[in-house]
Image 1: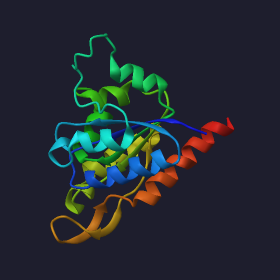
Image 2 (image 1 turned 30 degrees about the vertical axis):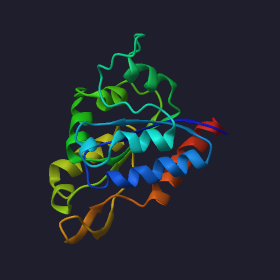
Image 3 (image 1 turned 135 degrees about the vertical axis):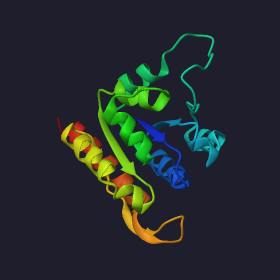
Length: 183
């Protein structure tokens, strides 16, 4: 079965792993639309995601397409699932606070489907009590959190905060989609 998946990418060094997530989801026959924050574009060029997904990559709320389409609402309404991988501490805090100031946060705010969030950040940030509390509150609100792994971080240190493996992320996406199919 083919699903409509929105994959959000935020500004983390782990953004390159999102390319592999899109590739895996496409191989399964899904339709994947990528939304990138401005900071995510500093790590991976939108053309990379466009080439793999065969869809236009959403990078801004205000793109002149000739026909008016509030993408953040239409994408959210038609998505079978919304996934944000990697998700920064900034993104997590914005969502919990109801801040919708870019295409990705607006889409998440308009979501009618399950939203999966895979955090990725430095261990000091991830273990910060504010970030931990934000993640707990999002879980209570029904967001699905894919916990990061322990491993070598971009700083060279070993700690928790590394984006979960591509296999784990794709596995959780498939689990959540199967729950939807069974309903």
